[in-house]
Length: 595
Image 1 (spheres, rainbow, N blue to C red):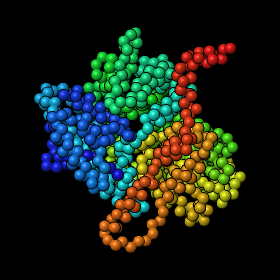
Image 2: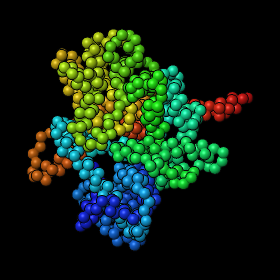
Image 3: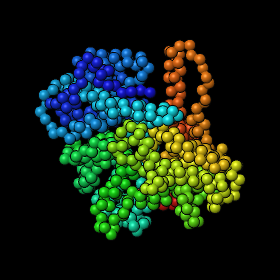
């Protein structure tokens, strides 16, 4: 497990100053360029992961002596068995936020001085980050023994995992598919049509297809960039120049904007800034790509507030989660990966059968039953950024396990909902499907999530820990729980992206079997240690082994599919061309069909 370079490691004999002190009298433009340059680095296999490469690029010749000194200190520190990284997304975003809000001031530093002071300021941000992160270990140590290592990993990574552990191309593909489903939903429902019209009016677009076609070139620039640097969007002069600039400026952070310090919310919603007329710079590629779908909800939420009361959607987050995330997205995706030779029911169909508190989706293929609970949720950003196990346990428990109500009552959430469904199945009381013997079936409980922030190592272990605890109650009731599989946290994007293989080659329940086999931790044999050093080495190896088992399902299935050659372009992506470019698509189709 690596760590980022702190000020105290690079400059052990210096007293740390503030970034304000280091960067006083510096060029605002130069600092912003540096921040977005760092944010343009690849999040995996970057050239600048090589410390010598980065330091050689960063420092000019006259500062080579300092660069070599820093490099030697890093190598000395790494002898302890800890890999050091210099650049991290959190510090780069913080650097941008800090300087974007500052007015230009007279430059008093030379370029050589600024180079050194910028490096020091960046390491101050790194040190501030690790200080925030330092609560992770002691808070996770308060968890049960079985959870300590998973929760240490989770608490350290969760606040920033969604900004560092991702595949930009996969996110682009799944965002496009989900966006088309979303706009088709908004267009086809009378209740949501006023909201869609107001959304389009805000962007001065006549149709949602026009909106996506305007956004598409901005996002492809973010994913096609091969060089590790910032990306500029240059609007071509012509009759559409003003219109194109106006569109981008709806997604552009303004100098007068008050930047929300929590989880970079302002930059997420406005991931561009203006360099000059017709030239706009991407702040962070991921945030631009997430504007395709993820960012749409937040714009819809804000637009909804401006609608007349009669047209406004009440409880829009709940409505969105129930009517779109579950009843459109979850249903369509599950149907696409279990297309035939199985028994399947959506939550809506089960409700029509008068089955109360039914799962969101039910599939039985042979002797294998999948129970799906779809949860499209976010926790508040201040709690997300806490690094604190106690806060996470409380917040996720309330959202995903159960909620305490007055007079000692509880409201079951995903975990207990799955347990209640399993109870029915094992007692043959699930009236939609009773054509099985309860001891013959294998039950796969799945928490279906809708955001990749939950693909953080350790999260699945926490939710399954609650599930296993509740499952013991079924055992105490005398029910046969031996074929109930561990709870799996599955990101719906993984199912969309790997849809072809899941529908044609290997079913989801088979993948879940492989996944949990891979996660199994063998019981450790009792050993006698000859020395304290031998014991400490064993302990470190055990921790490394445990951490290697904390792979999220999304990462496991992606690696498995690519290794086995199972991944193929999802036919769901075929939605994109004919939907957005219908006229061009129809014209091309007609030409190919002509004799």
